[in-house]
Image 1: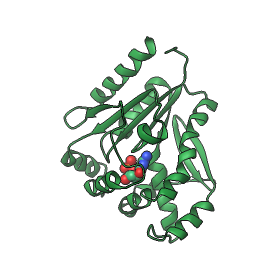
Image 2: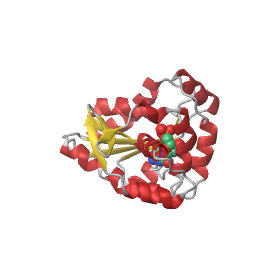
Image 3: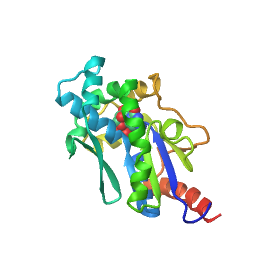
Length: 222
Ligand code: DC
């Protein structure tokens, strides 16, 4: 692969598996735009809840989604979703959003509304002069960018993941969210074909990043 070519790194995994920390560090190491697609599902969930829309009310979900104007703001190396010109704040990590996000994310229309938008983040990265894109989520290597140059799948023991969320001060039923995310019909959480699987239970963030960066760096040089 040529040194100057644009690269796409896909990082998938369950809640609190280490995706955000590792992808943020990789974005700095390789000058990539960091896209946290979980924050996109969270921002839309938060907005729909704010409008009083329930996940079970499909016509209301569709009408509300059709009326939203989505944009992207790049802050540092991170892409943020704008909904009607506004970037959501900490409310997307609230207990209420944690409880509802998997239900909204299981709706095919919700996923369809985000498909082209997520793929378009590669253009955002190019326009802003990044060397590539590192995108984290549940279906990045399987559905959004199945042709990604690098695909990683992170997993960790549920007790360790619960401990991480608690340390972040978050109230989150990660096992239940993983169950919903893995069992839904539309783009379930799955290990993408050809992905490198990494167990992050007993290793430090640095070790995870070193393993990923080693794989990426080696290929970039060859
Ligand atoms: O990564 P996170 O825990 O912030 O993601 C929040 C929820 O969003 C997660 O429970 C499922 C959904 N999600 C998804 O369905 N597909 C993605 N690519 C990213 C997140």
